Image 1 (cartoon, rainbow, N blue to C red):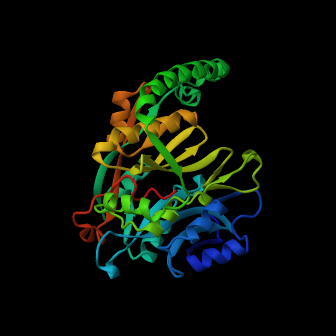
Image 2 (tube, rainbow, N blue to C red; image 1 turned 135 degrees about the horizontal axis):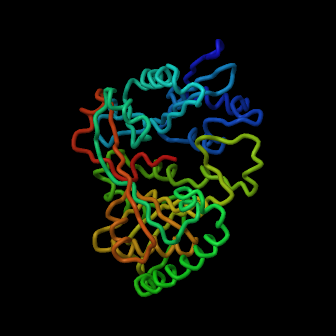
Length: 365
């Protein structure tokens, strides 16, 4: 282990200064978070000047570990007790995995956040670690992935010998995807013909009035300003020649094809739903899916319609109801779900009460 090892925690003010000085985005290495993401994080209405947002482990001034945390508010009336921190990502370089550095960085993150920590999900390789920590599970759910094509990258990942046939897999994928898209488009043609859409970067008062009651029981307090920050497309940056980026990032908000779509769905003069979805290359990530029970299937149809138009090969969602409806009513190649467990630190857990973690809670990056 390097003799020049240090662990530092950065507040909003300190992260802003580091950004202004280009401190952690020099050379041709890899940073913790891409610059465009940092700009967006610093605009959070729930991040005060002295709130912590990044803990770094440095060896000879090179980043070898980090934990990204971000403050948020519980959906409770007591303003003094509202603040919590999402522990979003924890990374340690391979060279340091079998050292105490990872645990030290983790404990430092707990210290600077006052142990008011929520974890929406964690990697399987650290499940044993969390099982020994003072955390309580608050929700077990499925992270659903629904595929509408053959997805050559997935096939090659599972069967490495097929990499020699990638051209044929891509050709077959286009054919299968086209057939599935044709049948799914026919299925939604009638239901979506009566609908109109408004694409937005910020909520107007009418849309907020529709959204607000649908978030009343969320774990995290929703306000108009907060959702406007959450759905701000500036957090994502299109980089047409991504392979030549000078500095890449572990937490990145960039790609050669990345866009956020916020869709206000109307029937005549009535709002019936709101969707926020990220198109990342050919993947669709569902951030917000808000509608009433009466309009649920039509809103799902709008999601599928946009997936087809964007040529999305698959959809990721933590919303079981949405995933189950798509699997039941639409053509697909295959689907699977991975169990994810959300945690709250034991010192925070009593404050949660009867609040429920929703799929839009903690979906920060």
